[in-house]
Length: 344
Ligand SMILES: NC(=O)c1ccc[n+]([C@@H]2O[C@H](COP(=O)([O-])OP(=O)(O)OC[C@H]3O[C@@H](n4cnc5c(N)ncnc54)[C@H](OP(=O)(O)O)[C@@H]3O)[C@@H](O)[C@H]2O)c1
Image (cartoon, rainbow, N blue to C red; front, side, top):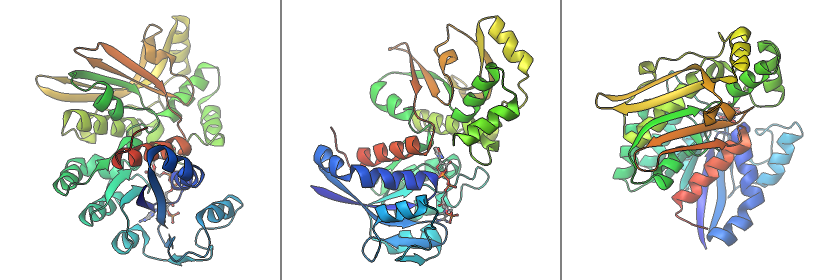
């Protein structure tokens, strides 16, 4: 059995869900994959926990936080200058980056991933910001050092997109990627179609923990655009920028548009499309009325979906993938297992 020491950066919804998965599945993963995933350190913006010096194990910390305690207040959690400090001081094999996504700077994740790769750690990330700005640089840095950077948790997480393209569609020529890539906006559109108002639908999404406290990036289409840019960059090595993607969100979708679509047997969905033609790679995001013959018309609630158009395998659609912190954490775990090279 090989041990892989994991450094978890970011201990919010996704980071805690990831720690919880490791606590609950460590033994089963060791048996099935022959690898012992050891959480060796956890950092948020101002505190760090290290297994080597901890007086409180991580399952107890998770329980303490669930019952209202703070991470910083747990015994053995020390004040530290955030994730950067942990990357520079803790011995680990893989960085798990679960810090906030900032689509205007890419930080703090970009600096974290760069520093981790420079120190010889593999990296997996749920944060899209660093990748939207620096994917090519970080990918090159990783490959120059014989390390891996995996981004499945940032490219629709539990819905397989780049993983599907890389493995199941290997050897095909993908000409188009079309997706419902944001669970929150799809949930809101589904509720609108059921007669709820926009505000009611958004409130319900927040109550169910689907939407963030600040759902701006979800409803204005920028989260969809970011995922699309990353999927296109990964699959086609495209140098597509967010500013190159005309993006319209769901805020302006009128109830009359939804009811007109319903009368015609159609559905309004927030669609991101990227396509490749001889002039290059292009992408756009916006609400579209889909015929019921389109598989993506059947993506309901907080589910997501993606259709790949290929030359030799035809069109393939995947629908589903849990849009919540556990789904994102499961995608991080999938990426860690891919890095450690273990198969079922
Ligand atoms: N939520 C989802 O379902 C989902 C799905 C897919 C991808 N994602 C992505 O996953 C990431 C995390 O999402 P989340 O919902 O878990 O966010 P969150 O609840 O806001 O948690 C973010 C965590 O990052 C920490 N952090 C901030 N700056 C840091 C720094 N410099 N060093 C170390 N830690 C730092 C925060 O610590 P403090 O509390 O100390 O500020 C907090 O613990 C985001 O990039 C998001 O886009 C989320």
